[in-house]
Image (cartoon, rainbow, N blue to C red):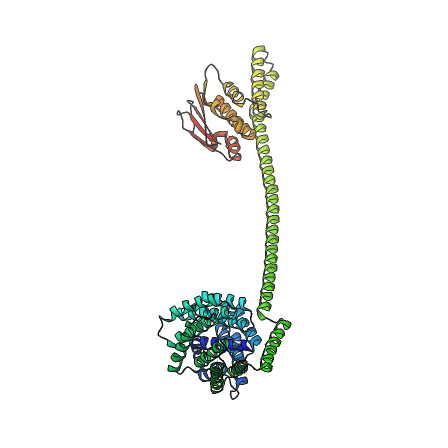
Amino acid sequence: MLSTFKSSLFSFLSATCFFLTISHSAIGQGKTDSSLVYRNVLLNPNIESDIESAFAYFEKGVLEDLKNHDTIGAVNKLRIISNGQMELGAVYESEATIIKAKKLIEKLPVTPITREARWGIYSSLGQVYRNIDSYNNAIQYYEKGLIYSRNAIDSLMLINNKANVLVDMGKFDLAQKEFETAYKKSENLSDKLIQARVLDNWGYAQSKSYNPDGLENMLRALELRKESNDLRGIYSSYRHLALHYYDRNQDEEALDYAEKAYKLAKTINSPSFIENSLTNLLKVKKDPISSEFIALTDSIKLAKLQIQNKYSAMQYNIAKEKEKTEANRLLQEQEKRKRQVYQFIGILLIIALIALYYIQKAISRKNLLQQIYKTETRISKKVHDEVANDVYHLMNKIHLKIREHNTLLDDLEEIYKKTRDISRENSELTIEEDFSNQLSNLLHSYQSENTRITIQNISKVNWKSVSNLKKTSIYRVLQELMTNMKKHSESTQVLLSFEQNRGKIQIKYRDNGVGCHIKNKNGLQNAENRIKAMKGNINFDSSPRKGFLATITI
């Protein structure tokens, strides 16, 4: 039962900062009067107060706030309920309530408002675990609360509470260092009650280690509290002084302060204070039966808590693990869906590429058929215009019984040459390994006594890097240009220059022939089609008596 003494200091410490914040929330809701009245009931519960109505009021407020998505309002009301439960000694219920507030606040980002709420929640959890002797958890939450302290008062209060836990653990030297730190902070404040509170706790820690300064500090704190008529603080001083003298077997002084504490508890009319003071009074009187009863009661309470194993923090941690597991499961499901989407997109792309390949193949096949048709048409026209006419004239000569042997032979030779040229132009080309030499031989084959062919830089082209398809196109186009030159240009000089730059080949053809007006490419449409099929360009430039120029880029 002595453990319940620990709640009084915490309630008094947190009331000032915490309830000032809550009052703003209450005013904002337009329920100031009721909030203030019921809040005071839970902060100072007594048998005459309508405690049940106070709890019902704030519990209903929590539901309304959650319905209206006012998380901060719900958190603040849960803190009031938890403090009220602590005042009544319902530690487990207080723990469960403050854990609900913790779950809500941790879903919100850190702001000045949520920072204060976190500070208060961690402070409350520290006090809960101090009351059930879970000291390491208590210190852990007080240290978490320090992270969210907004000012010197906030941090001072938590340092003070942490030091009290160290006293409970019997670590008096460490506790004194913490109290000394807190007292130095309090000296910068104008609030004498805060100084008295820290001084009293510091003095009690010194008393437990038999430091002679302890009694002096506790008495100084008592005087400061009496000057301010701080009844709760005076009660705490009486309790500490009673325990101080009890430890030193000064029974008369111990009993005196224990009785003063009991009378003051009845004046304050706090159930928890009355219970604490009675327990303390029975202990100081050193009645064996009373001492045994106190020890038995404390052990039963602790055993019940341990057997029930209902620490809400444990349940909270389990819930958090479940949330993490569920979040991981959802994340895995999302990743699985993403993979399925990517796979589906990949399959669509593959199908599209395959379809594009066949479409392109079909287009190429169509172009090839068109090219074959054009070639066949051109060959047919040449055969008809050139060979067939000459054969007809020869047959006509024979029919007219023209017997000049040499004339007939000359005609036959001319027909043969034309047939050979047509065959050469349209026969299947086999690309030789030394394409430079193969192409040079083709070009030089058009040289005659009257026409000189000059070739520049053909060997400087890296023909091995050029596909056979492009080589074939170049070969046939130049063949067509040279044939056209031989038939129509009457040129005496022909110059062909080659240049390769950044993977592209440029070929320039120039002659000094009679030239012409460029109309419909003058029968060179087939050459242009071949170059365009290779994604290249061919340009013609000519005028009468100015020769002929063709520039091929492929």
